[in-house]
Length: 402
Image: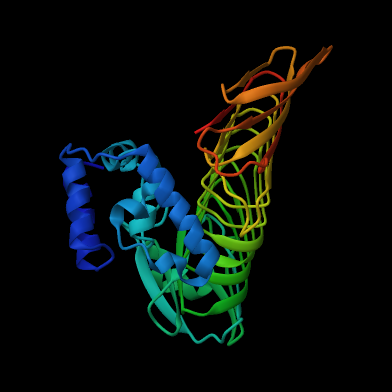
């Protein structure tokens, strides 16, 4: 995508009132190579404030981001770098956040669309089964559900044959004919109400859901990424093969469980009792999220635990990380203390930060096993609040306070 098209897209978002004039100016300035400055300490405390607001009033937390810088603080680098790194890819984090009407990896050129409206009641269920489909769900401004189906012009008159819908006010079931092999783009705007269940399955395309309240969300894909942002509910489960999974700024009370057979997985600023992420060939990243337990398992990839928080008013939380061919890095909030137990295979290493004191260490035929305790000089609590258990066979385990 060249610069003029990028600017045209930004102006379109502004015209549709999906971003403010100030946000548009910041994006255009970034394209003109104007850097914005950021502070790691500011980002840390902004994130901490965000977590506090989650605990106090979770249903409204996602409506309070008036400051553009704070809204995207979790990027961890300046806006200019984000845009230049990712604008060439339509599934960039920036444009996923600014305009959810732009599906990941979807090109609308040469497509024709048809809109349909459905009236749904509170606690309704939604199910979508797609083949070669990009599926995007978000909260809309209407009191009705608006379904938009986009196909190639030659197939526009066949939409009713390609699409199968089973509808009642408490259930909307959408599926694409398995015999239809061309690409289909499915966009569903939901009314601002709570849903009981949303289940999405697709092949050869990404799945995205945003700003939705639902008790249980299940997303399953093949050969495509999964993205869930700013959703509220009880349970989220995402599973894909040959695709990445990103969960960001969500509040699922019971659990967030993610599995990928070939792709990276990441959680950022999420909130749940359990956050469990597993992949085979890919990295796992936990950033600025809150939980009782964080679990990560991968075979060929690195694991990062970066500045995590306990669940609600609890004081302790657990981090479990296991990888075979990769490193494990644990950065504990500088407000906390930590107990660290780890094992590295005969080809692995363990590195502890200067604020950690080795309690015991042993070696055997498998490698090195260490146990240590540490407390940052910034800590305001004397007790140990983070317990960490990590394992690697062929990598380095790093533990420090930040």
